[in-house]
Image (cartoon, rainbow, N blue to C red; front, side, top):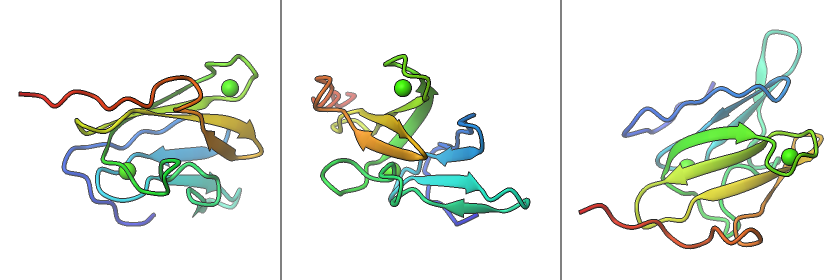
Length: 114
Ligand SMILES: [Ca+2]
Ligand SMILES: [Ca+2]
């Protein structure tokens, strides 16, 4: 696995079959695909699940996967540092995702904690 930079522990394992999603504070997030031979390949950018629709990474703080649209594929929801919006990655199947944050109206940034 690649080195990560997390000011807080932001590592989550999900059961997408054979994938592990790692939410990184600083930098793109990682999506590891099981190669079936006891190794994993990092495919986050290829799968379109590493950075926001803007192409920029977000300061990820938490992640969970659930099938919000009931199509059988688990979708990813990430929270980020204050001042950034949360991100919804819709699972298109075949290990590919699309940023649906704006489409579902979740694009507004969270409030800064004071
Ligand atoms: Ca991140
Ligand atoms: Ca789904």
